[in-house]
Image (cartoon, rainbow, N blue to C red; front, side, top):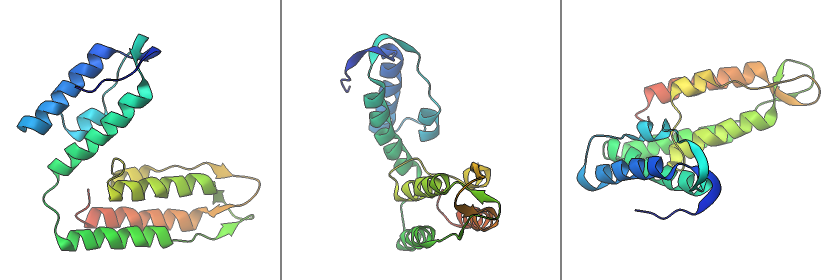
Length: 168
């Protein structure tokens, strides 16, 4: 069982310990629950003299990656190539910046695409095609932004690519 720093206001220690015990049972014995999705949706009460939230979150994200890796079928060379190609495609996209037409905030769009790539790399929880379709960005009224039409078309194609691929 990991040791977390206790801080003035942090996560309820008993709740965190119970979830970690269940996660360790899955990783050690192959128990069916909790899944990576269960861990992601877990919430803890914030109490006086609880575990440091950042330390717990970092630990849990590492365990989520392990749980996700166990849930996926063994990777094939074709799958890795598909993921690599998808990552290259996302990283190479260039949206026209405009000051005239309807536009999205550049930083928000870039940060969202970085989250998609991090999920494909396994460094963060993966985003689904539904997450991509539901992506919403702040509209820029003054200054430069990405053309909304171009971003929306790209995200539509990205959602289709995630649906069609074996990446989930």
